[in-house]
Image 1: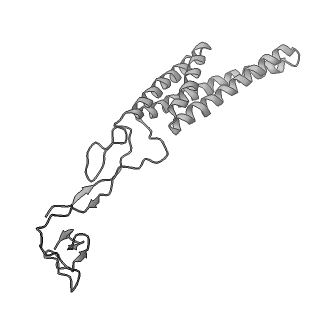
Image 2 (image 1 turned 60 degrees about the vertical axis):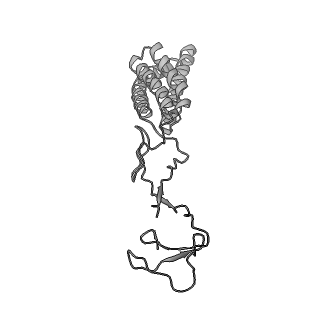
Image 3 (image 1 turned 45 degrees about the vertical axis):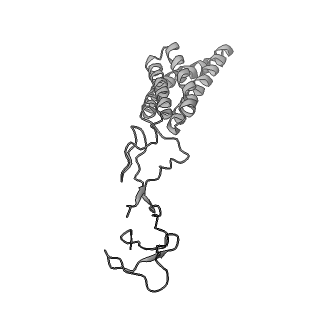
Length: 211
């Protein structure tokens, strides 16, 4: 009698993209860059509002102050909504352009720490894309009672499903078991067996054995 062969289902990843290790690192660096950007923006906005007060006398000062305030608020929005939030959702490709833009602007305007953090995050976003594109993502490394994924994957424990062994060949004219009469008892557990019409045999579902 052939043993039943366990068949393990593949994990269902769902609609949410899998977060990778490099993606977590990119999210951390973007968050650090955003914190330093907030500190720098606070100083910029303070002086911009001073310019805006002077603008009541000189209109040109008011226009410059308004542009500075608008640009600073816009960059904060880009950092949070287009860079950090996209990375947190796993949209690495969508977060790359805003992140490198923030890094370049940070270096140009002298905010070195902010710019460096964003540039490192940009590099990590590229690594995260390559990790996700790797054929090993989502593939179990070993088949067993507990599935294991590579670093950055999602661990899962698939419940095994059992496939009935293929029908054995019988000699011509060999009588098969009949469904009439009382079913025989399992020789292992002593429980009544169940007749399986497609195989013409009695089967014990408790012991997973044919009678």
